[in-house]
Length: 580
Image 1 (cartoon, one colour):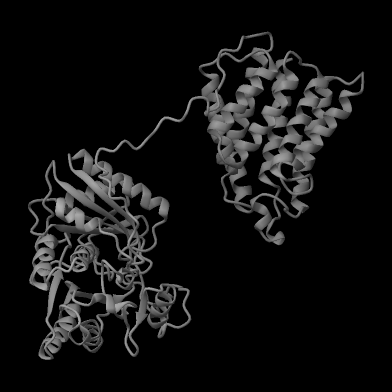
Image 2: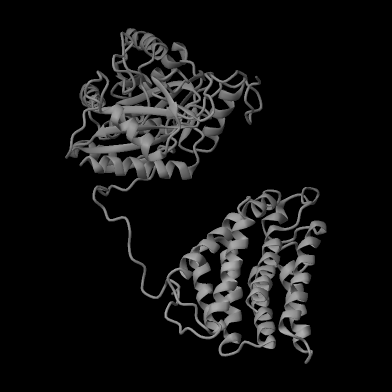
């Protein structure tokens, strides 16, 4: 097994270069020369106030340097990846913040890990020996273990909330003893639990543990320490419920006390590699689950606050929130990693709003049935059936040129049309039908394809109001095609659906001007041109759409959009032939 790839210059220099990058990108931060210590660039503003110092091993970014700023930490000390910082650097940071007595003391906020307690503790004793008024608060918010043992509960993401409360009090000029008492009490009302879908790996090393495919680990630490239970990966709702059930289980010595009517701050913390989409889903699940228990979720943080390198996982942190803690929580800070949160109570807030009338596209449903209704229904049923049948084929073609969802997108439209057919009369006027379908695909199909098909149908429909002859259909297809070209920006030869649609349109227009041309014969020719056009895209360089960003040598299959168009034309031909 190889060590995981990471975008670094050097394993040996990665921590130093990371700190350098954090400082270089934030004017409010400077680094203490000779140490992995970041402090506020305006230390003079701390005169007469308590300075706050935290830190720990690297790999948890943005913790802790990202929380240095007015209203939060005064400084942060970084160790090697997942290793406690040396006491010499902690002492140097304490002395820099003490400024020879300019500040009203230094408070150390430390996560409950043996290395951190030892190294920060040693530096504290050394600083006291030099006459520095310094105190230490240990944060132990882990809710994983029912019986934590002598080492106690681990310090996790709840530490960040302690930074915020202590920082707000320090900014107000509160004395060291009072801050220690207040945050010590607040820390008792904070609980955290994590779950992981993958391990992480220290740069240059193998992953910290192995998880079989399809499994997740509950209660692991932020350094990749084993958790309490492994189980099959479940849905976000189920995972969140499991986490909250475990966190609040009163039979556990580490449980977070929670009852109906309580007010809490919720922190949904990305452990490193979850997508923003997944984080939003988990956040929704957590809020919903808590509110379902009668808990008031008054503030929500969702993002990366204390990570574990590239671990794919999430932790949930809850903090009991009274009026004073909320006030401190809401005090503004310049710390770069703290989110710009609203001070509004989120509990019970209505999260949706009806759009203004007439903004949604109506799907017409009251059109009059006519002689063509039955054949038009059969055509639509055939088109839908064939698109669904070729869904995976179209997806496979799209994986080589895009995001692999062309078949699925067309399947969404097919299902929407089938659903509509099951409960509506098909209008006998082709123009009215195309207008209805335009609204349907716009609302249900989505994406670029939905817009393009809706443009085509919208532009084509007026030319078929009260008409059903070959010339009208030819002009309608032409109008729809031109609308696609005008707004989509593509042309024939660009390796798009137009490479099938344009030849078919041209064939219909050409044959419609021939008096002896029959409708079915013209359609047969148009289908053949569409299929040849789709096949020709194998040899075309993409100049529009997502495929235009793919190297030409990788595009050896037909364009999926063009294949879909050819499929639709062939379906129409077959359905009309069967209806004769």
